[in-house]
Amino acid sequence: MTNCEHCGYRLLDDTAVCPRCAGEMTFTVETLAPRSQPSKGLKILKWVLISMVVAVLAAVAVVVWIFNSLGPMPSFG
Ligand SMILES: [Zn+2]
Image (cartoon, rainbow, N blue to C red; front, top):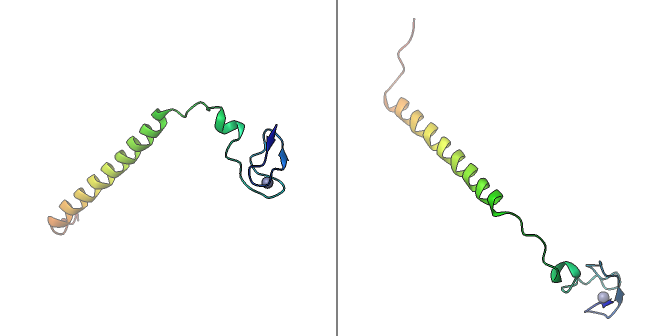
């Protein structure tokens, strides 16, 4: 049995917000029972993808800069 830590209202076990005073509970079952942590591989993969995108953009910028520094392109025809 859980009571609201703000107003003492009797709450259901899976209630995260008090229906009477709308105060958030800090001692819910979810907080006490540790969930399975999200794998860090996904986070690393996200940063790898971001790094690749940045690298590709940098490469494109360098290529564009080189072509611009070479002057006007020779016309074909
Ligand atoms: Zn309450």
